[in-house]
Length: 175
Image (tube, rainbow, N blue to C red; front, side, top):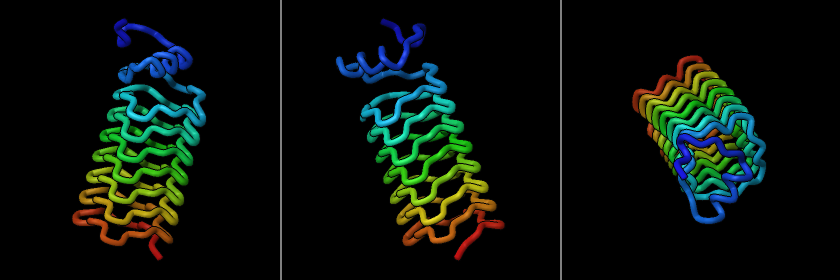
């Protein structure tokens, strides 16, 4: 079954995942309701997940590069080692998310809520984090080279061993 030409709903996708399929790229799951879904290793490359609810989802080791996650709820989700490069995360809800060792290279996180997020070792090179709320986020060993944090709230954030070469911190709120 060629999924790129098919329209499937979330129940069908979860059934296919349970039977071993992992590639669900280029599909449209906007406004999908999937709190607590456990689909590690899934490929959702270039999938539309606009305004989806992925609260407490487990997506570690997955591929979400090029996805549209505008206004998506990923609070308390496990996104360790996930590829989110060139992903739209504008106004996404990412409080308490675990993005340790995730690849967010070139992603757009403008106005994202990342309070208490774990971004340990995350690749945020050339990411746009303008006016993002990173209050109390853990950015230990994060790579922020060339990132734009204009107006970002970094109060209480841990930046130990973070790479900040060429990072724009204009009007950022720091302790």
